[in-house]
Amino acid sequence: MKYVFTSESVTEGHPDKVCDKISDAILDDILSRDPEARVACETLATTGLVLISGEITTETFCDFQEVARSTLKEIGYTSPESGFNWKDCSVLNSVHEQSPEIAQGVNEGEGDETGQGAGDQGLMFGYACRETPELMPLPIQLAHRLTERLTQVRKDKILPWLRPDGKSQVTVEYSDGVPTRVTNVVIATQHKDMLEEFQTEQKEHDFIRKAVIEQVVQPVLKQAGIAFEQAIIVNGTGRFVLGGPEADTGLTGRKIIVDTYGGYAPHGGGAFSGKDPSKVDRSATYMARYIAKNIVAAGLAENCEVQLSYGIGVAEPTSVQVKTFGTGKLPDDQLTGIVTETFALRPKDIIRHLDLKKPRYKAAAAYGHFGRETSDFTWEKTDMIETLKKYLKKDA
Image (cartoon, rainbow, N blue to C red):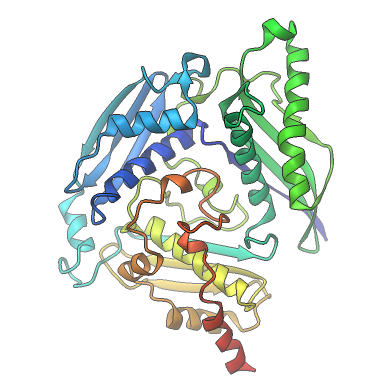
């Protein structure tokens, strides 16, 4: 059976990602001096304005203005020509402390439980599969690498006329569940106004399309080693000069499908950026990915989805479920039992096991929270392989 599946990604200069980056930069700044801080930071960006709000309880000081401006500068909003300027935009903050009624359920030794409870109720999903070396679905992995490459060629001045805002979209054809080729790629990228140089919009567009295909699309797809068609759309409207927060208001947490699996696997609904690890929206989703990835890496399944759920102020998860879609070497109910036996799933244990109280979150805010194997992304480690393989031997 053949079918196609599509996922998208956005660059760090996309207005929503600008907000995610600022929120996580604030989180990192606070955690660098106060690992026990409670942070739920939301950012809005629009024409000439960054507004920071949310609930933050900390013993340290955060210079919101400095963190926001330095993040905008790092992204590349450094001149009026790009539509947003880190130097002269307004940065406002309206931040208050975490509700004491929530805090008593999260802080150890307070509330109904003596252990650290979950920061909110909710459900979280993790997923892994054999489609890429990183054990991620191929469409979202390719989409992220394309937006990452867009940013790289801009910052390295290979294509110096690019501007920070951009998107990618990748359609992959599957045959009997196996990805066989890329059938469509869509790139939207902000660029410098070059009409004076090219005289017509068509000539300007032809130049941009050729350069983006040669320097962005083809290198990424060739490196992936998968067949692809030359069905590539670049700036489908013809021009993309006005971009960033000037063209489109951005908000933290509005790209949650981009952040996870590109729609290939479920999402519990909670966003990540700006939240400290006491929020299970973030920490338990990272843990679910960690569990699913280790199950697949250990050879217990080809595809694995893990669902966790929690109640606010309660330490133990309210549910644990493992699904392997018929690819498991052991039955799903047995794998669920193995997960509850092997992995400590209380919020405090997740935070300790994945070492989540250290600054590392701004790097995760763009190009995917999953599928990048760096030392800071502890939830991408496959260090439980040998432990899990023992269960295969017991069943043999």
